[in-house]
Length: 369
Image (cartoon, rainbow, N blue to C red; front, top):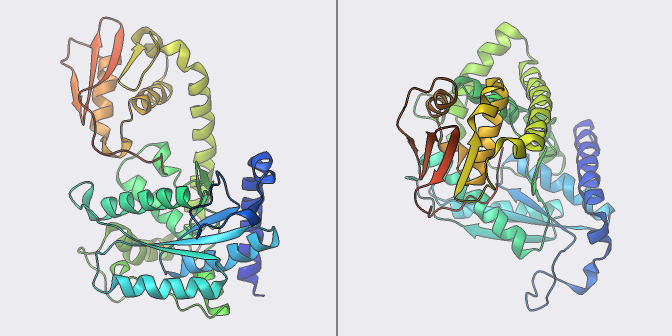
């Protein structure tokens, strides 16, 4: 086995063992032999199936090859979910090829899902991502799985950090993607894209190269911003700052994530001291006097917790929205309520009130970083 495979295998096995130990009691109680997802008439609450999100690219096919070896060693099975966004001509053929490569990689079950992407929701990329994650979570339910493993790499992490910096985002964005977030597991965040390509060559997996990702020879402002960062910005950064810049960006994300997680944990512990009444899905009242005694870096986390209670999609908020909310706390001069998407934030006396204005038609499946 190649060095790239051994490295990826060892990392993936550690993540898998962390997952299985976290659900040890329930997983040990499962008689996997009595249930098969291809026989839906049989009832079962939880399975020993590890779900893999597969696009057909090098990263996800390498994930399929590595995770199949890992989970079979520990008497689990794998299922690949291949989401066809139907946004490119021939996407069905790409999905079919991905299914064949997954079978070749040793995946036990394969599910192809076609989704309709409403580009008006969050733009082409954001809407595709929203549809993709909905499909993955639905598949997790179908397969009775407690996990969805994705093949995001160190390179993806570096690009995510740069996108966060470009948008003036806070620590949550700059800390990038997390190795684990709810059902989502990303074991390859310390594996490079070139290493996943090496693994694919080792297992003779013919991976798909998405034309929307562009290339060094063909890239302009019409390509997605992430692709422009990959082929235009990062090469310049490597020339100036060193070839390991992607690793350094990913390491920075990890360090910020550790700090951010600590502050989030402290905020959750103290949240009860900040609310004036029991928070609900429709209404949260925060104590302005308590918020004023905190630095902005701490009060911002209480604000985010309040927004999370009322199911606010944080991706729809701009920095300007947070500045308006901060003004209600620190610079209040009788300002009018702030109208956010399906939400109103107002200050009445010493209460900062977050109130839903009407029900949303879009259900956010889970918090995804």
